[in-house]
Image (cartoon, rainbow, N blue to C red; front, side):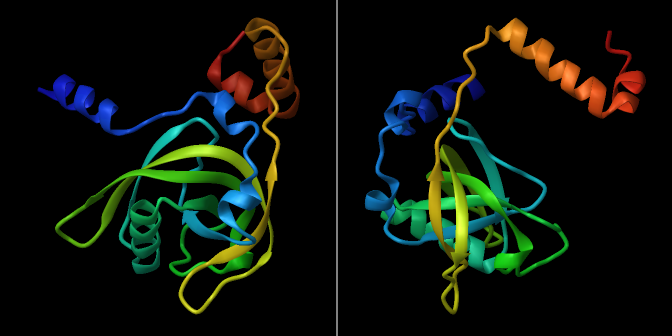
Length: 174
């Protein structure tokens, strides 16, 4: 039963190829400011689909608006998950432009949503209105390494080993 549900869902959500987002003029597509979805204890990257759940009124409303009007949001991490109503200075200024691929409204008023990461983004300055967190923004180029996966993994591991030796010793990784 679960597999048939997943098969049906894959037909409802279109996932473009990674190359489709490389030449997009985000300023033309979005405008001069982007609405922000602060994420607690979570982050999303381009070409990743992330399920999120939110019960915050502002987040619920912006998720519904983005889904129904097919607008893009900037999903960014909150600096502290304890803040219930984060402002511009309470969030990371680096994040990901996302499309809300699907929303599920739950009986308690919260929303479960599937976010599809599109492109990295830097938030420049606060452009919030009375109800929504927003910012002027600059899309960032997504850079893919040219190294083979094995060579890249070795370089990453060497960086981790040199910057966090206690992680290496605790995890018994050669």
